[in-house]
Length: 177
Image 1 (cartoon, one colour):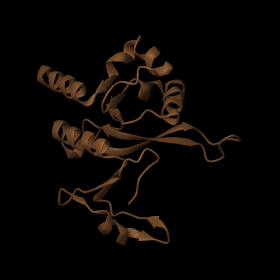
Image 2 (cartoon, helix red, strand yellow):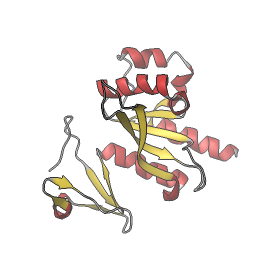
Image 3 (cartoon, rainbow, N blue to C red):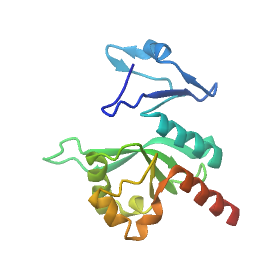
Image 4 (cartoon, helix red, strand yellow):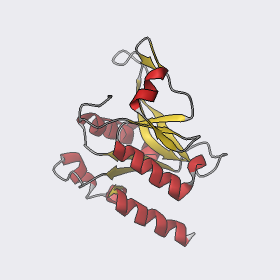
């Protein structure tokens, strides 16, 4: 069974059949130690990330939700010969013709130092992405974190939410359109 350092179990979802795929079934896609999934099977790092994905699909439709949206945080250089990327958990593209997402969502069960580092770098290198980012937490906001405490005192505070708060916000915004 695959888990990350916080013991969150990976979730595999077959978008064609709209069903979760077992770990045993996923094993057949592993070759020489590398997992190569077909395009219709999505991998989520946790049950919470999958729950956020399903919520977004309900709100915006599957065509609008993009998983693991890559952003180049730092171009290649001496410190990072291959550059540094951040794959944002989920992105919303309002239409098939939109070049950029209108919303980026990072689903957090646990706030990690690498997430904070990526967040700070994103603000410096891509303010347009930073201003489109929502941090969605599973249980409680991590108000003991210094960066989060500071963000809660800025306009960004409206984009640090629990999933239920985000759904209410989006439902209200869609009703206003």
